[in-house]
Length: 234
Length: 290
Image (cartoon, rainbow over all chains, first blue to last red; front, side, top):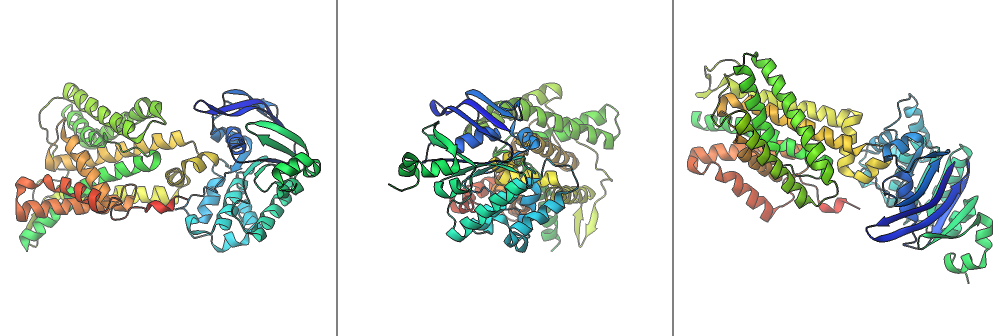
C-alpha cells in the first residue's frame, strides 16, 4: 500500500531523514519506534505532505505522491492524527469531527460520526463543548476520531499514547487494534515501544534518520539489541 | 440631549465604518496571521470605483457591484503575487509587504483616477430625519444597516457553513487544518477576497457622507487597526465592538473636547491598548496554545 524509498528530508541544512526505506502492506499495523529526534514525526509529516522532501520517493498504491499537496493526499485516503493532538481548540468537538471529513462529499458522514462516538463515548457526551477545554486524553481521542472521519485507507498515528494514563493508553491501543478489523492500515509512531510492538504486525526502528532494525513485531520485541536500546530492558 | 444624540449617531455611523475595516483586518489575520495594512485601500477602491463608474453613466447599484468586484480582484491579486510568494516570511516582512502594496495601490489610484475629492449622492436623499431633536442624515441608516447585514452574513458564513468552519479551523491550527485536507492557500485567498469586499462595501456606504479621494485609505487603515487592537486582534466580535467604541470616542471627543484632536483619539487608543492590555477587550489569552 505504501512504499517509501531512499526518502530524505531536511530542516534548513540539517538533514533529518537520511534515506529511509520502508513499506506498509494493506491491512497491517506497522510500528515506527526510536528515540527522540530519530525522525519519526518528520517521516509522518513527509507522508502527509506538510514537510517537504529533498530526495527519494513515496508511493501510495503504486502511484508517486511525494509531489502532491496535503489536501490531495487526504483525498487519496491518507489521514494523520498528529503529535501533540492539535485539535481545533475554539471549535466544538462535533465541528472538529465534521472537519475531519472536510474532503468527503458522501452522505455517510453522520453515520461515521456516530461510529466515532460509539468508539469514544466521552466525545459524544462533550460534543457541544470546545475541543480546547477537553483533557489531554479526550483531545487524543478527538484527534484520532478526526483522522478517522476522513475514511482513511492508511491512518498515520503520531504518539497516540503520549502523556496519557496507563488505563487510557490501553483504551487507545485497543481502539487501534479494532481499526485493523475494519480494514484500515495503520502506521503508528510510538515512544512506548513495547506497547506498540505488541500490537504491531511489523516494526521499524529509526536511529538518527535511518532504519536501524526492522522485522516482525514479536521478533523486534525479542531482539536483544532493540530490547537494550528501546525497551528499557538489559 | 439633542446634542448628545447627534454625537451618538455620528459616532455610531463612523464607528460602523471602522468596524468593517477592523473586520477586514480580522478575517485576513485569522486566516493567515498577516496584518494587512492595505485594508484601507479596499475602502478607497470601493468609493473611487463607484464614483467613476457612476460618472461614466453606470446606474449607482451596478457601479457599487463593479466596485466590489474590482476590490475583490485586487485583493486576490495582492494575495497571489505579494503574500503567497513570501509564504514563511516573518510577520514583520509580511506587514512591510502590505504597506508597500498599500502605497502602490494609492499611487495607481492617483494616476488611474485623480487627486480630487469626490462625492456620491446619498442613496435615499439628503433631507435630514429629525430624531428627538438630532438631525440624522438618511445615509447614516444605510451605513448602520449595511454594516449589520455584513456582520450577520459573516457570522452565518463562519458559524454555519463548512467552508466558514474551515476558515476558523485554519485560524485555530494551520497544521491540523492541512492534515484534515483543508487547502489553506485557498482559505487565505478567500480571506483576502472577502476582506476586500467588506472594505469596498464600507467605502461605498460612507462616501456620500465623508467624500473620498485616492488617499483616504491610509487613515482608515490606521483607525481600523486601532479598532481591531481595541477589540482584540483576531476576534470578529471584538472588531465590531472596537470599531463602534472608537467611533463613539471620536465623535464625543470631537464634540465635547475639541474637533482638532479628532484623529488623535484613535492613536491614543492604539498606545493605551498596546501598553495596558495588548490582548484587547476580547483577545485570546496566549495560554490557549498547547
